[in-house]
Length: 180
Image 1 (spheres, rainbow, N blue to C red):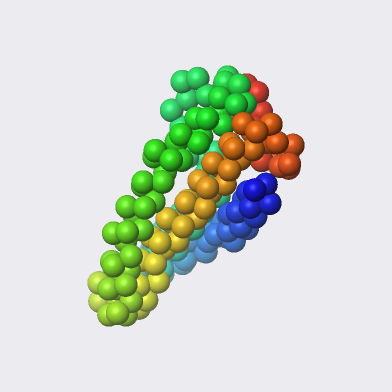
Image 2 (cartoon, rainbow, N blue to C red; image 1 turned 120 degrees about the horizontal axis):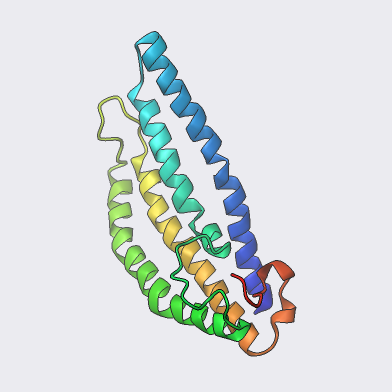
């Protein structure tokens, strides 16, 4: 179980590193669009599509990483100062009641949407825009999968904590008293 938690967290850590580089691409493409527009009075619609699409792919691709790092919004009434086992129970409850149904609905309704886009090899709605919108839409499913996997890791980590086996996890994946 601890191995599975480490594996999932490692995958999301790797995806976080890879997709964080998209931010550099976004800045460079956006900068190029601005320079072309204001200094050369020209532009390309596909470049405008590109930085918007990169932004969407980056945020959907790193969602699991963000959950791993507790970067999502959390209503912190008592969690920060809670005991380790209480944090584990709260996380387990949250994954089953909130994250699980959310990713299920997203995947269930998103799959036909993405499949349709692939069937038509959908491209940008903008004249002169980028082809391959179906790839961007596929990131809805990537988002659902990486968040679901990280939620599973959170749940299993909670099981390990409740079984007093948190020692099987590396320090970076352990709960700490009085902090998130």
